Length: 234
Image (spheres, rainbow, N blue to C red):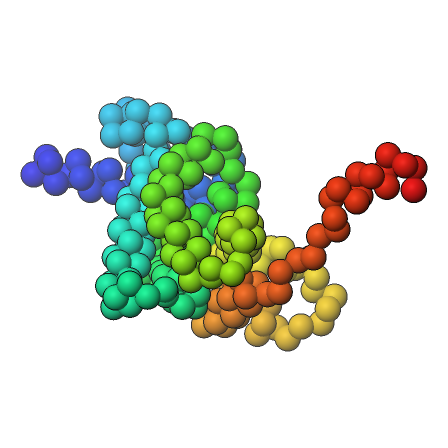
């Protein structure tokens, strides 16, 4: 009975911390707030997690472990069905980003609370969180990157890496909420399009990500010619 109670306490602390970190950010959330809302004392938090930093990491780990496993499962299944042929870019984008966005409908996996937390954290990360997330994502990102290289053999690898970086940024801001969108409310968009509606956000974002991935390659000026002209004072 004591073990069950201990597990319940641990999950309650994680649930409360997830919600408060999402609402106020890591720096804006105090341990006093967490213990108060979770109805536990500081000793209980220290017993289960040791520190606020470790608590934050565990809030992410319990969601990211499943997310990373699911992304790998989806990619492995698609590659198995492709039987050695390159995947379609749309499949890869959906496997990585679509799997994340579909978590919004799964309260057992954190639902919108976790997505908002992840988006907020990726757009305003502390150094230790940036390092932690980079480690958690490393293997999965490398696998999807290789799949993109194979799917887009005519696109320079550097361009694919940059585009994937832009896709991560766009997704982070999208799932963080509509705060950024409110900066352009004078554009007079309809109220229905200014709300956090996943039924519209998902297809809108996925279309944008795929369009960016497939967009024409940028044209750079000749670096050597530019340097020569600068030296000559032209």
